[in-house]
Image (cartoon, rainbow, N blue to C red; front, top):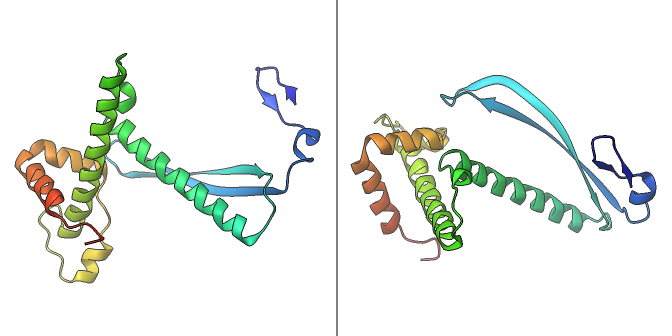
Length: 172
């Protein structure tokens, strides 16, 4: 390993090669959103490399892809909780209080995800879909818009909360 001028470290060929069995390249494009949740049109490409000591097999490839997708799913959820519920802005020293905030935010995230899907399918501007097909294809409204709708209409928020608790689980 070699150090850089800015204090970082660079892995050298000697560090990587003895144990490397798989190198994975992930290319992705992200698109930023403006404050009103409209896309600004600029796509930012990035390439990530993952180095693994696992042998290159079909099973390991499937597991790696699953792991990467799962990680980004959690990152997306954490981003919503940070930006909409402002979880990282909490300044408290009491671990119990912080644990309570995290637990409450997780519950709110689950309920708002449920309500967001239902509102999108029903048409959150009271737009009735003509067919089930168009309702199924309707884009999901953003979390920020969902929260604004509930801020302006607490009774609607309460109705979705009651519907959430009245919903049967997938196993039943």
